[in-house]
Length: 156
Image (cartoon, rainbow, N blue to C red; front, side, top):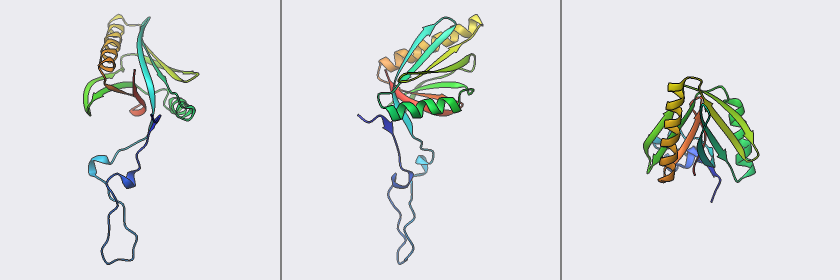
């Protein structure tokens, strides 16, 4: 199994042609494929902790791990968001704006710790943790974002 998801914009819908022209063909692409990016494929686990939850993203591939860690360093102060999809349809999206998320590097990836000192916010974060865990256990793909930028995707 590949540890990276990569899409080449110029080959997504085939190459366009220009009849009777000596100019090179311009690549074409489907309008729906305009915003394609590459993110590391990881094993993602979520667990409750004191004051909130932890999101562990671990990669088997060293290159994917380095890419994940570098993205986390660049986007460390951004809001954390997790989105679970099944067959391309969003099943659950948790925006963790109600807490502080800190990123720590691990040997094979990163650990995002999202916590709040407010009891009601902590309860919301832990409810998100339960929802994400159940979605991934049921087979959903989870995409973790920082500051609106996807940093990894995978399942448990």
